[in-house]
Length: 625
Ligand code: SF4
Image (cartoon, rainbow, N blue to C red; front, top):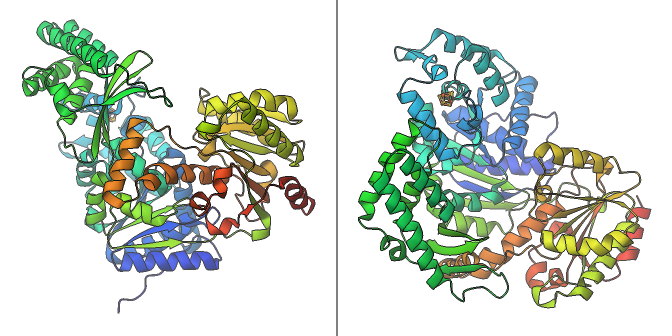
């Protein structure tokens, strides 16, 4: 039997629940299996996954990839590795890589579409017009300047992207290229999902850093986002305004015939929409949309394949003069439109006077299955991965273990209520209902001694209910605004947190940026109230998802509609208790949470109490604080 690897845990003590997760990760990686783990906030899942995965990787010559969906999540992985180094005196080589566009030293590239940026960068490199790139190598070998930069990076305690960028900028060397060279030697690579899950990027990326999928342990953080991210990677959209810009671009570079073809295509698309969308307005969603077939578009264009080739030629010409090309965007869409039917939906819709044609991926496993089949192990983890079987099905993970860990926080520190006194169900929505919700919310918020965050299913409902709520609530009220910059959002959260003594109320939306991305530990947040269920509007895409998942798994309604909404509400609820000493209440305000179908989706360790008598419960909970 192989000797167990030495796990270098980044903390002095390992809690029993972390022991469990470490053992599960070791079991999975030693048997080349995948692991899906629902690991609630506070478990310390970054440490409990990275330490055993790295121990196994070092013993067997593998690489650990720690993938996140946001740049901001890289820091916790970097800090964890730094603590492992300090506590155990070991050398662990880590590379932190974000999107190439964000590491680029050229001016004004951040606003470019990723595809445009990639083409722009490729063009500069091939033409020898990026000195930052050229300086990294000298006659095919790593230049002296780059070697010096890499050795500075290797000896720095900080190996974050910010440090790579700083070193690269100081030496006028492309930071992305430095990261790639650095990653060749790395034991751990921290990056975005798409580096390994995007089929177009993965192969090239792995080749450049000299790694293989079969020799990789992949940890996917906040894994509840992976199915939707995988679908988005294969989804393409074309709008009438994109066509118009492409037409102008073709004319600008004297490709008049193609410009006319693009104009004709736009006109024909308009006519097609006029006939197909007539009378298609959905009574509830108000969407004007219709399912279309491949032939609806291909029949509008003469010599479809040749047309794509001519557009690609124009795009190349345009890119030699400018950073982005709309013609390229059209060509890319037309190519994708010829893709398979199974697992996709083609939709034509009109939104705010703009026509949108989309080729939408319904099946995340089209992207994930290759990774799941080839990788040594994939560890999918998040605080909201229940039911784990749904993620296993959606991502087609075979040879897979599933684990659900309980919250490590003291049970008495958290009280969770379902209050079935109202609902935001569409059929029951009316002014009276909104007034009642406002009244219930103010009764709750006025009794909670401190800050409360309230999440609504939509901005419309938030604003409608807030009109009355504001007159009844005695607390200072903050409203999340989706148009704020990330700095303005941070400032708002800081101001909200400063009200912890007097109490304030933050009115947000379940799917808004505060619904998943805020961290208010200690007394900064005393309660979270989730109003209604953030079910997606039953758009054509959702209907297609439901019927596709029904055909594949017999669980269309759950996988395509109900469970994603529950995941969002649990993310909202997770804002409340962020540490072992936090105390707080979570209240689900909607009668549907009391229905067995929905109630059974809430994790057992929430110990939910269904009650109409919420006031005595609130007072009792905080009296004992
Ligand atoms: S090679 Fe580097 S610096 Fe040059 S354009 Fe590409 S990313 Fe930017």
